[in-house]
Image 1 (cartoon, rainbow, N blue to C red):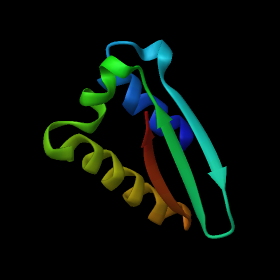
Image 2 (image 1 turned 180 degrees about the horizontal axis):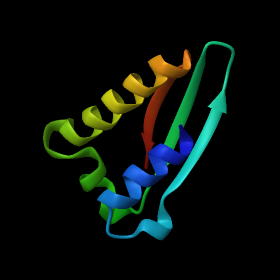
Image 3 (image 1 turned 30 degrees about the vertical axis):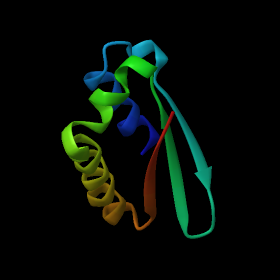
Length: 76
């Protein structure tokens, strides 16, 4: 799942070398923290949060297949 998020984020941003994903695993949920360059933050969030919502939707669809819950946090 982490690899999927990295590929999606690198495809969106202008500085793909600054994309970082940290995975925090707990018993029921795995939190994926996405960090990008300050200038790319708007691209990842999108207008009215539509890009971020689309990424979360993809993660939810894939998480159903692997029987685990994933949450996305976009960190400054």
